[in-house]
Length: 376
Image 1 (cartoon, rainbow, N blue to C red):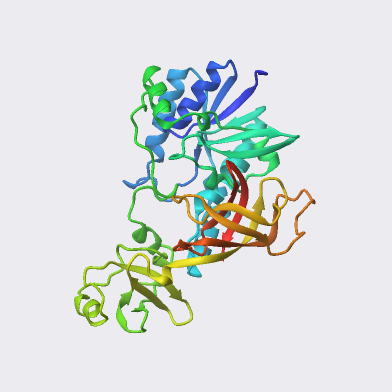
Image 2 (tube, rainbow, N blue to C red):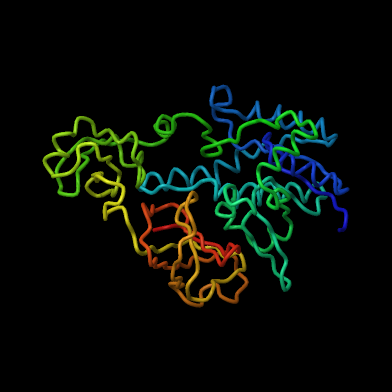
């Protein structure tokens, strides 16, 4: 393997720390960058950016590599957060981590690394890149519980050709073991959860700062009012907790249901400002046999052929068999364009649960992530 100058995105977590170690061990010249993407409330208990940088700097010290602190907060606000709020305002549930990868980690960060003379960048994502017949494929990480290809599906050929994912070849348990063996200070640090810039804070409280909330009725599948919502933007399909349907034993009993059967958010009617909730995880309103997606991005630069593939309509989901068909056959095909305004349809032999507008539908052929789009 040719030795190269590689810039690693060091986040303060164990995955990126082991990434840097593995590359240095292979003899590469490794430089680290810490990306700061959010600064609206640096002083708050929920913003871990300063703690993460201290952890990243401690890792760089142990590994004896340089680290640079780079502020991408303005890029993040323009390219990711503005879109995030736009989607919520129209009642959809966006996935900002997908956009953050496409616009910040593999665009703004990549550009910055190239200016530093890097030949490649590397991150601690659980995914893999394979070169085949002159093209680059995005593959699932080998640890099925940690695979992050879903969040990376908007990466294109130019980005993948410059990217390495060393921990994508390893199970998480092995990554932790390596970190302990070499004495990394963050070896036992727990994985971050939630959306990158929101951290562990109460989500509704965070959104409240940015979105107007217009309360309205919550209705059941018979059109009966069973409660009041605080604003449609604050709910997502399939949501079970925090709906605010209290004291509904009488409703459950009256409709012949079980008074203890949980309620789930099933639909939103933006025109009527009405939220619909239903009882039971497998209620028909929560199941979908098809979906359409737009704002499409294909790793290979063109849509796959129509046929039976696999797909995920949310991250924490098993791959589901799906009949794929591009809604505008030929759009982007063979043009080398990585993203087009095109669309595609998926039909599922087994209905999928809580397919949510604004989330990503990601298409797979075995272990190969082909790309995807935003569910409409």
